[in-house]
Structure formats: structure tokens, C-alpha cells
Length: 172
Length: 192
Image (cartoon, rainbow over all chains, first blue to last red; front, top):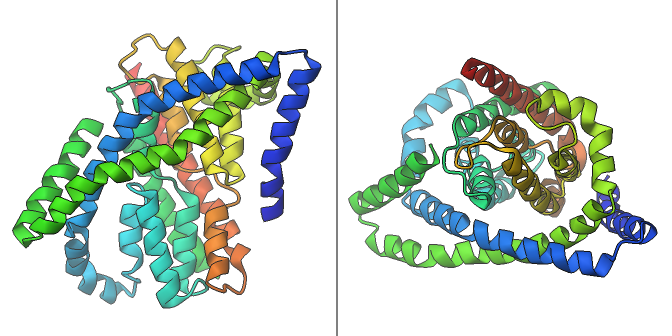
């Protein structure tokens, strides 16, 4: 499956270029035009990414989440749930790199084939970094009234987390 | 809401660091987070510039419209507010396809172009349109079929079967997407 995924990009590029060639488009000129617009897009998303990274780093590095999870530990032990997954579930919508780092730790400490390891894998695979995606996409077109986008996205994440628990329990 | 969240992250982060006495690490964080932000943009820059170039060819040759047409019956149900021949449909399809294949970084430029096209049809340029929110909900619940990074990392830690989590991830994704789209549908209708 991985090799199919790796073939997709070269085949797609080949197909686009070939199709443009056949339709007698000035492919090189069009490429340059598009690339120039891409550069402008990057210019537009730059401040929103910087702003989000700044806020998220201050929040995550303050250690407030660790303190919060310590508070929840007795509760989780009673329910027989693995507390290790909680930081990851929390961080997943906020930062892709941070949740990947937590998953890495879980693999190192418990192994990828443990319950927590499978749960972490499912979680990482099933949702995306909601807050980052919102900041990026809305920032690129300078929209500041996002209406109900964030809460709906986070609700979908929550359902994804609960569903991950359920399916990892059922399937393994 | 992003405004409030952004402020919340910073205020809570700084106040908590001060209470815990982590002043030097707080200083480091403030000074170095900008560098991390720049690095993130620099990682994105070549991919976005390259794919915007390729997609310009796809757009001018009419290929993008063709891609959009194939998915139109399904997408017009999900995005009823978009025009029938909207260019956004082609980009939305490409974005979803790239996400499904686990090509997250290639998906981003398509998503940005989709937003740009939707913004052209948006009446209030400062406020998110219905179609944009649906698109983002679909995007953030991550329609991944092959989570390539996860599989690679599992392999690195000698998993007996690195691909075994594909099924549970797909099922969980479907639940998240359906839940998100349902809530989005009801909230969209409530507005009218």
C-alpha cells in the first residue's frame, strides 16, 4: 500500500504535464505563473503560522497540561484506562509535531503493538491538526470571522478520539 | 473564536510558567518560537510553490475541471452553496484525494487554492462562507486512508504488523467525518 502511495505523485505529475502538452498549453510559462502565485500565498500564510506557533509553544512548554494530567491520574487508574494516551489526544488538534513526538515516546516505552501503541497510531492517523489547519487556511485568505468552524472541527476530533478507543478495543 | 483561543494559549501559558517559576525556559520559548514558525513556513514554501506551478498547468489545460466534474454529484450535495462550475470543486477533489493517500504536504497547496476559489464566491470577504466551513471540517477530521507517517514510525519501532492500524484509523476517521459533517449541516441550516 505504501508503494502505491509513493507512485501516486510521480504519476500525477507525469499526467498533468502530458495532458498540458497534449492541449498545447505553454506548460513552462504556466508553471512559472502558478509558482509565482504560490509564493504570494506563502507570503500571506506566514504571519498566521508564526502567530499560532508562538502561542502553542508558550502553552505547551508551560507544563500546564502535565499538571492537569497528574490531577486526572487517579481517575484514569480507577477506570483502567491508559493515561499515556491523554496528552496525545489533547495535543493532536493543536500541534502535529508535538503529538508525533508523544506517539514516538509511547512506541519507545510500550511498543507499537501494545494497546496504547495501537491507540496512538489510530489517533494520529484518524484526525488532523485542526487548529493549525484553520489558522493556515483562513489566514491565507484573510478571514477573521470563522463562525462555527473551530467548534465543529474540535467536535469531529472528539468523536474521532472516542471512536479510536472503541475500534482499537473491538479490533484487537 | 481563533482570536479567543490564541489569547487563551498565550495568557494561560505565560501565567502558568510564572507561577511554576519556569522563567528562563519561558524566555527561551518566546525567543525561539518565531524561529520554529519560520522553519515551518520554510518547510512548506518549496512544496506550495512547486505544486501551485503544477496545478496551474492542470487548471489551464482543463484537467482540473474534469477532475471536479467526476466528483460533482457527491460534492454538490456536500457544498450546495458553491456554483455548479466552480473551480473550487476541482481543488477540493484534489485535496481530498491527496489527503486520502496520506500525502498531507501535497494536500495543503490544493486546500489553499480551494480556499482562494471559494473566497471569490464569498459575499462577505471577512467572514467564512458555509462552503469553507464544510471543507475545513472535512479536512480537519482527516480523510486519511493510508497514514504514511504512522506506518513508517511503527516500522521503525519493529512493529510485527505496521499496517494493522489502517482499518481502525479508517473507521475512526469515518466516524469523525460523519459527526463533523452532521453537526456542520445542522448549524448551517439553523442560520437560515
